[in-house]
Amino acid sequence: MNNEHSAEVGGFQFLDSVVAGPRKLRQVVAAQKELYTSADQPGWIYYGDLYTGLKAAVNSVDPSGTLDKVVRKAAEANDARGLAFREASDGFLKLMSKGATGVPVKTARWTDGDLTVVMRRMIGLRQKNGTVLYVAPYVKCEPLDQDGADVLLYLMESVLDQALPGATPVVWDVRRGKAFKLRKNTNRVALDHYVRAQARAYMYMWNAA
Image (cartoon, rainbow, N blue to C red):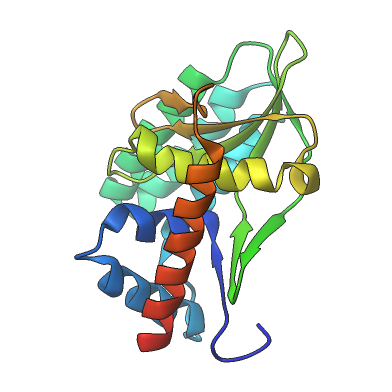
């Protein structure tokens, strides 16, 4: 970043701060700042192999077999990690329509003031009917609700021209096998104001940490 008062974080990490609520926001942002500025690997590398596997699966002739290998490798290292990967993989395969194929997605950035949110780990999918989806695979154990998904969907819609023009943004809570889209009656002006307010709250806590 350009200065010590700027931050660049991932979309899923920004989402974590929003859903944390006001009581836990300071704690979450302080922990993220420590991870981002540490010389060690970020803590969320825990799911790194899973994200890589999901992206590989959509480009494979055998998505289930591809993910099975990822799950087995995770289970060999840690039983709990293996169970988490299995749950996420099963949900992902349930949500991915038969005949869907992967399409390239570019890393995109959304900026508000001194905060840049990087939309990493996104997946492009072309369905059999030709519809293209811009998918955010949410893999955390905590369930996601529509309000939380809307924050990520807003960011995805905002960067669509950078990432995958013409696609439909969708968030998949893969552990629950649940898909979220922005509702037709979503007040985008109000959502824009809300997300930008959250971005400023994030930076206030970042600079206070």
